[in-house]
Image (tube, rainbow, N blue to C red; front, side):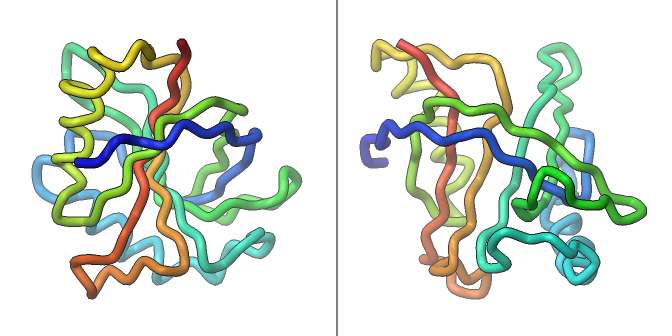
Length: 152
């Protein structure tokens, strides 16, 4: 894995569908399928070509976490039935480039190798996956980005 880029991102809001669990049976890819079939219900997308997978509320005991497949929206956007709205605070992030096949490796590298040796610490707040217009889930080499909130 290559070294991450350190960047700041202003606060933003997402609307999407939420899953809570451990993703032991590929529930997250299934969530994406359900979500993309309903993406037209989200009216105030700021960019319909960028999706987010936002993670938060990790439970160290159970291993469960919340994951929201989402689009960025205006702060006043309405929430379709069966979806949630999350506010992501302004943060500094370590941004790791990966692909769908290497996403687990990117998480492991971020938390087990890079963070302990970097001089940075994981800070409170959600982390997220960013899927930009270059991402194509049918092309395994398509880039995606893992944003981990950090501080010195």
